Length: 155
Image (tube, rainbow, N blue to C red):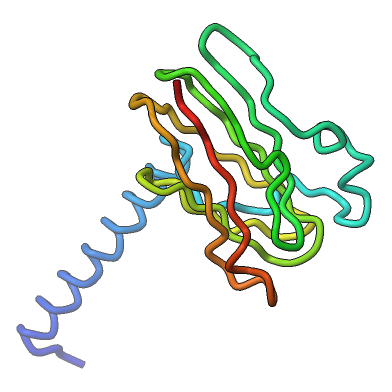
């Protein structure tokens, strides 16, 4: 069976695009470690308060100008609710939910994550500008959802 010339061109171009997209996706995933959040780190949502590091949420200095914020999210509150860090600090947030799906969005930044029970979400951000950053839950989590907020103060 003989194909029409335009069909051959169409098949060649679409096959080339498919191979190109697979190569780019593979490169980004493997070389740059860019991949969607997965189930790599999990936790029993019934034992969040008893499992390290979530048994002691808060801000910890882990290096020169580098901090780790361990935070739990549950019915209309972030724990800890107010965080203070120095300007220019690299901050890694470790987040988990104790009950339902919550959102973690920090206004004026590109931090925006879904935090699910049983999974640990990790986000790293450098806060260069001093100021007060509002943290909001952007996933509807129940009747008091609109009151769920926290603050990050960068000095």
